[in-house]
Each structure stands twice: as structure tokens, then as C-alpha cells.
Image 1: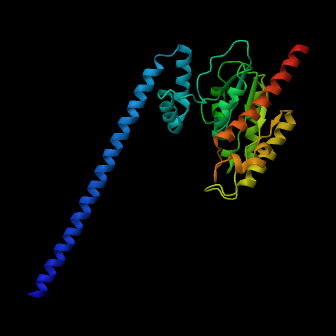
Image 2: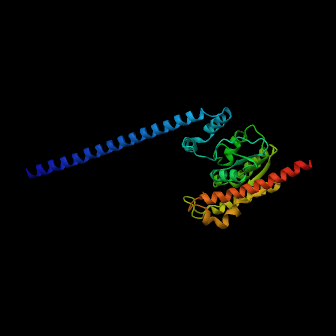
Image 3: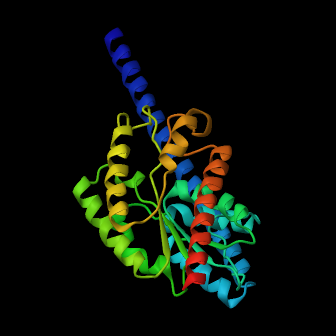
Length: 284
């Protein structure tokens, strides 16, 4: 009889545990579903508010916003939309050209995006500074999207970099793609500036030991540029001595003061080439 009671008690205990587990899993699933629905509703509200804001813009700016919607992708587009409905100034803002000023295009990854506003500030009244309508990523993406980035306008200076997204790209492939990209950019008639890829820390999260890869990429790129007599804005050497001060720990991205410094360097490089270009045009 005692054994039967023990067996029954054990059975009831196991049953309680199983029921409790099922209830817990059901609660978790319900909470996850509720969270997903809430996020979906918030995202939909952002899209709706962005669309309403976009509708108030000029036709030219609406066209630019459409280009961004088509190219920023699932990561950057929601961020951009939230920033715009919050009234923030961003690197991808529409630039209304001052007709008498030269046009400059920045092509690059998230580091380039980070210093875009600083470049615009430094070159205010000197140049119309635009940037490509996405995080440009690797050279393989550039070969597909270059025409979209260039648009229909005339460019006086194009400041360009590819590197941080090429860590796993074979050096020969990287070099060949750069050759093709620079050929297409030179065909625009713009003065080109190549920006060397900024350093990565030795303890870069999930990419330990990749610092030397950037050195090799920069060396290969320098060979391509020297052969074509394209000036190099050496952001690698500029950033390296002050890296601990201006770069985020264990990260390839920079602190706000770091982007300000990079932006001033990039702006100085662009201003120098604009001056050289102007001098050549006068002589001709």
C-alpha cells in the first residue's frame, strides 16, 4: 500500500512538472508573439510617418528618398526612417546643390558614413558634398551598384574606399575588382581620390588577427592607384598613431571626435584636389 502511495505521489509530481513546463513554454511563446506584434506595429507606424513626411517634400527630394528606400536595405533603412521622422540630420540627407559650387561624391562603408557630416561641415560654401545611397560594402557590390551611386549628375571629385568588407576576399580578386571600378569612375571625368582603409585593432571582436590583412589590402590598392596616378588620402596612416584615442574599443568604428578628425582630413584632401582641378581648368 505504501509503495502504491509513493508511486502515485511520484506520478503526480512528474505530471505537475510536465504541465508546468508546458504552461511555461506556452507563456514564453505567447510573450514572444506579443513582442513580435508590438514591434511589427511600431515598425508599421514608422513607415507610415516616414511616408507622410516624404509626401511633404519637393519632387526632387522625394526622388532621392525613393532611391534610399530602394538601396539602404533592411538594416539601415529603418534606422534612417526613424532618424528622419525624429527630425535628425543624417549622412544620407538630400543635398540641394548650390549651382556655382563643385559636386563631390563620397563612396564607402560605415566608416565613410561616419565622417560624412564632418566633411560637409568643413566644405560648406566650398563644395556640394553627396554620398552614395547605401553602405557601399565590398567591391563585389560596387560592380553591381556603381551606376546607381553615380546617378545622372556630373561629379568634380569622387572620394572612394573599399576595404573593411574585403577581409575574406582573395587579394587577386580585390585588385581586379578595384581595377574595374577605377576604370569606370575615371570614365566620369571626375578627379578621383582613393582613401586607404582605416586600421582595425588587434583585438577586433570576432576578427582577431585581421590587422595585417588591412595592410595587405592597402598595399594592393596603392599599387592600382599609383599606376593610374590617382591621389591617395592615407587615412590608415592618419588614424594609426591616434587609434586608441579615436577608435571604439575592439571595434573598427570610431568615436564621435574620431569621425570629426577623419572628416577634417578627408575635407582637406578634397579641397586640395578641387584647387588643383580649378587651376588646370584655368590653364586649359
